[in-house]
Length: 171
Image (tube, rainbow, N blue to C red):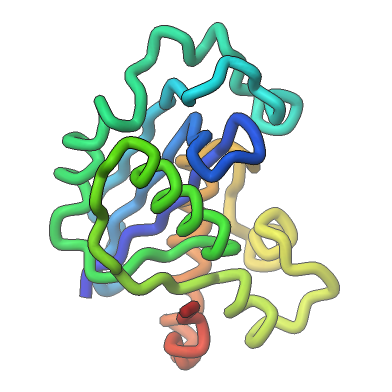
């Protein structure tokens, strides 16, 4: 099965405000490829710059999601399921941003490594940085590609431990 770990950084509270995307494609136990891009959001106010370090100056000349969709869709070719840490958030951003631009994305299952961490790891805190620290996974937190790579690594860890991955599915 081909999975793609996905992580978005957003400019503001809007589900259409993707300003960076990281994608990591995996099959079996192998990382096949990765993709990263900054995305010009629909509004110039970047509420979460303090969080991820992405500023309007970095984004203003970048293509919007609609202009990048062809490259993103090409990367996603063959993907049978997405993986995300806090998958409801990333799923919401993916579908919210696509809908804002009139892009139809097929319904693909989402696996949530946050849900899996809560079920399998029994840590005091299950945020991405805490899970990565517990599993000794490198992370540059709030960089979309690093977050996606870490998420893929967590998922591969779960698979390697033979945890029931269906426990990570979200509806």
